[in-house]
Amino acid sequence: MAITTSCADPDIAWQFIRTFLNEDIQKDLSFNTDTLPINKNAFKRNCQEEIEVNKEYIEDLKKDASKISPDVLADMIELTQQHADSMDALISSVSASQSWDNDVMNIILEEAAGFFAGQRSVDDVCKNIQNRASIVVQER
Image 1 (tube, rainbow, N blue to C red):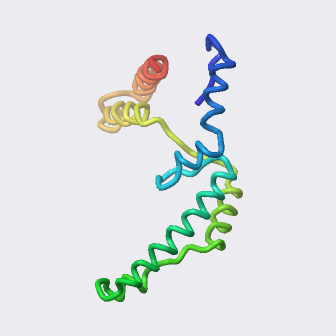
Image 2: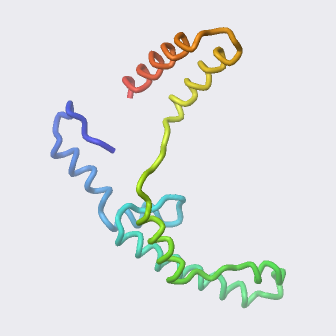
Image 3: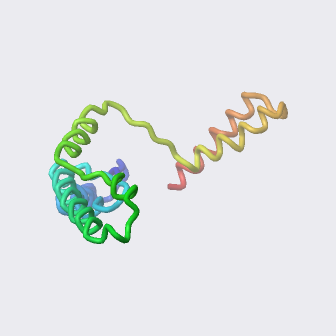
């Protein structure tokens, strides 16, 4: 999320964005998903809840152990505070990130095919990529 220079009301836009940074909202948006909250307190709360949920899950499986393969029980990992601390340390050590835009990446792949097939020059391909990608970004 971002506030552009052409935003009609930057204060309201900031209030909207700040809502998503709230600890409770971050916790709720990220729990049981493949995302991590950017709010550290929400991350810690999610870790604690995951540890508790995991513990209950494993206890329930052990109660019904006769219905479950011993290999499955043996492979179960009980989450601990040490796991959460290790994850926190890993996240805190990250100093860079990488991302890409799928729409732009598809343009690059489509246009590059002509170059690799020997049908178009690198300059022609780069010009087409720049033109098409600019249109995609402008339309957002």
